[in-house]
Image 1 (cartoon, helix red, strand yellow):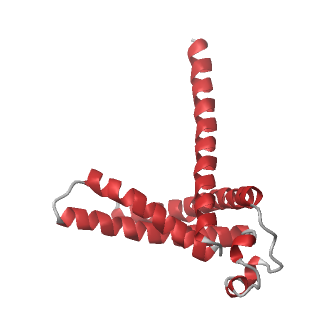
Image 2: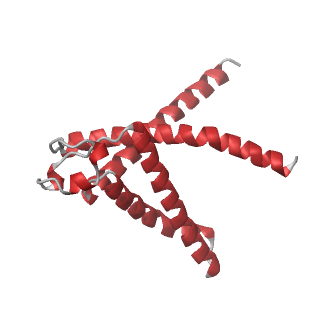
Image 3: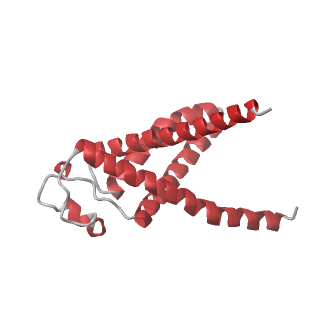
Length: 168
């Protein structure tokens, strides 16, 4: 196969799959923000998300009393893209540092996991804009939602396999 054709195929797949993955992630992020606002509480700010972050930070009330502004789907996709890129760069740097010191990939992955959580929480707290504690709750809800979706997909696959095995 021609390497140029492989590159074109990769770019076409990324041109379709990346926006679809970001859209799905934005739905999950928006659901996590909604759940966080319901659980943690807080009054809805008078400012729209588009007025952020300056307006939110200068709001006369304590930011911990305010609900997290709900970003549009496009803004949520952008937030996820930026968080993903920064997280990728940090993980690559950790992997390169481990490789330079003769370490294996498993140790680098174990080190990168808590660092990745810290990076994601700090990026969410600055991009949403909200407090660090509320960003942690958003990240936890994102994880829970993803695990529930994975469990539902797994249950459908197992049920399909059982039905197919029974039809033989």
